[in-house]
Image (cartoon, rainbow, N blue to C red):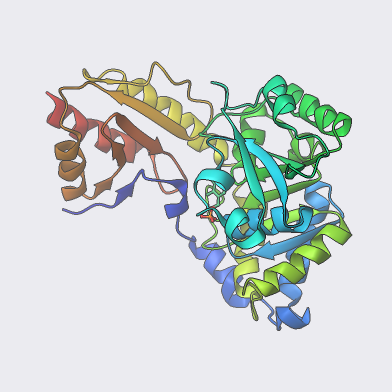
Length: 340
Ligand SMILES: *Cc1c(COP(=O)(O)O)cnc(C)c1O
């Protein structure tokens, strides 16, 4: 019996029937002409919902982050970010390659934040030897961890004092809002620009939105075209994104509860421990004892149709709308079998 239980990421979520119907029924036009009513409606809705002047629908979070950096910066500018930031580490160096924008990474603190003293000393003086420090880019959630509202406020003040633009890679920002039990604006209000992934826990097949003021979004729209990101009857995708924002936000709490449950169950298995990592949202990190053959475990699980991400030091398990309690119990049953 091959089940398909996928703990690798929340990007594996598949559109539900109702979402597919919304896509099927979407009114379409050519978005490069600005004619797609469904894309336009999503952009208006997303801007309002997150408290920005304007929004831009884009094909991916990677593209949305790149558009943000390229719209904020000129060649020879730089952005401050975390050593573990997605837009530094996991986006193929796009800002440097395509934007001639230099990253200045800073070691992330244990809670995922960036220390303001360390950031301060990385800001470069106005001197032609140096790149021009232009943007601070934060990420929330980062590795499943939530940045506090107080920290975000401090970051905003820090940027005002240092004439920096503050960007949020908010791929999983709704997981942060859910964990903090606040409206999304409590987070977004601190930022000059923000990206939101519609295709992770929110369950759309494709798409992110970039948010900011009108001038910034107009510039980003031009760059999106330059990068080959102008899409035509994109309303078929925007409809899924709109559906995701309207229907799949409240349920994220289930993923967080399931992650907590998963972590507790894991801790009952000898050789596995999540104790070193607090589960704050939908991502569970597991330390695995040195004697455990993770290749064997991963392969044995895969043979049963259960997919996980493993490294030799441990596992990363992600809960999402297509993972039920029962799926978690199935994983636990198999792990117990392979580990004892
Ligand atoms: C997933 C993710 C992105 C963008 O990913 P895409 O696969 O390009 O949509 C950006 N930032 C973070 C923090 C992410 O988790």
